[in-house]
Image (cartoon, rainbow, N blue to C red):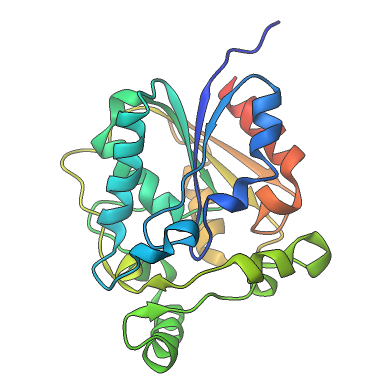
Length: 240
């Protein structure tokens, strides 16, 4: 049976950029799918736009505008880690352009929640201490790939070389929805080697929930870099 051609919009997480999808995107394109993998404002090739004013709402606008001006329809919108915050906001803005949301080891926020709310007070305090000590009170230095379970052999050195700081406002600003979350197909991909309790809780919360599919994959957090073929296959299974 011929696979239906889809548009995948891939939204990276903290300190990454569109570059992090470089091993996954060609696999999806080889199967006939369109892939958009932008860098969010202030990240990677858009780091020249970094400022204390850049926050979650900026990144929601990035993705909503990209989808509108790329005339995307029936897209599969994938958010990794912090990118889950972004796709939740984009779904509120451009629901009619989205066929499915996929949270890849990502945060799944409710209206009014921030990243700080979801990661908890202890992690928030540790990150904010680094921001105050190393980032002039507003800039968050990258966390090493090793912390997320990515070895040098798997691409950890590449991640650390490419990672860029991001504004603290991205973590502190709450998600602001304009109405009830839109009804659409949703999925969660849990990277089970990454032992962060908030991602496990997010996956477990949605197992068996109406409109949700949940898949566990045997990878650490950066699956698009360490296991691109497994992630490609999982995304296409969920899309089907």
